[in-house]
Length: 338
Image (tube, helix red, strand yellow):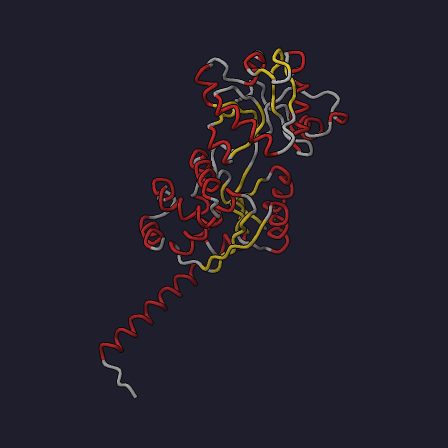
């Protein structure tokens, strides 16, 4: 039998103690299940959460596949997963508020990404060239600046492809703002690729473009589009839900309104908040600037990067953002383990 020297024994003991301390740290944080939604920004956020919670806080973090309604339903009825980093809640606001009120779920962060939402956009160059046209209503008076390719006397407003819910809203807003009278044509791009292609073609040629899009997306980041505010205030949920969002035949009298504000929350289960207070506090603290998120989405598209790839890139190159979310000792651990 090989004799174990005192030095070797002490080294082995030190390793054992070190491993035990790591296990204790993980036990204090506990197990964390994080929903990785099936779109780019949510996948990035889930992977960043996993790395920071695992490497910085010592959690046993695990990603599980998710999507908006299935994840919400599972969290509400089964208490799992623990975390949904990017949950767009407009479609189920009342059920979410009920779940929060009855103590099953918690909105840990009501604004995890800034500058997000749906609306009407123009290229940044358009605003540089026409700074006075800084609202939707002002732009609607100038269809001549957005000539429609098939009839140059008309202005082109690019809507959503057929079958998308936003097509209904855009068609009803087109009527509410009397855009046909003002000289506009509602243009169907035919597909998601057609919509994106219309933007890239216009920006690459230095031409004006006006239409619907949403953020965070790689397209907004890559082509520098700016969302234009409406002068009209939001005309209420009844007008939006029971008219603007419905087919035209079910919306006889649409009222002019700003776009319905998009709400995105980071949602956690109430049990997780009680048992994983350190992790819950981190989730409450982290906010992605919209510009940074869009830059990361461009990175993902250009490099065919996964959410994990993008998370590592984000943590390596955006320290000025994420190190503000965590204590210095946690940031140090994360950086050491990248």
